[in-house]
Image (cartoon, rainbow, N blue to C red; front, side, top):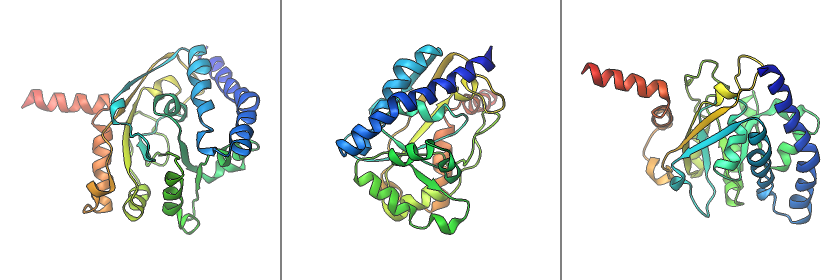
Length: 247
């Protein structure tokens, strides 16, 4: 049953992208010239159609930490493809930094470009100037989401973070919003083709401004963000509770 639900889940996304997404991209992008608002349609479609059809609920904690009237970079852990669509209804408009290989997919690559996503290449030289590009997106009222683990965790435990976004944040004055995603890997696992109904939790931590980490090294900033995001993970909280009990 999980396999069938997964097939229908992805078919529902693809159908929505073609039937609803494409006209909206043309309307908002080509006619209204407000490309940063294109993902409004994603928030509407996932919240009111896909999530309801497939029994997915999002519980969000820390909404008071979402900045108003300013662009920011969402830094989150990564367990599932579901990590992407939960961002729109929970936080709002956002584009993504994603693997360049995704741009090779027919239609999908055009959609990624249209909503302001930024490709990251395997060759580091091809990524030169990405920080300035992210800064430009924020100045144009986009928000950007990045998953610094680089790929999805298979067992639900966070992988080490890569330096990229933290180096860019220091060099280009990027405000960073740490976010913990919990349960997405249970609802839409990486390790098998299946989809299960249930709740997904999101914990939005306080924004970290460029001024707050100006004196920190890239390594220290990276490790600090890993600790902040991991602190809300159930396995980490269980570890801390166990240590506290033993003490």
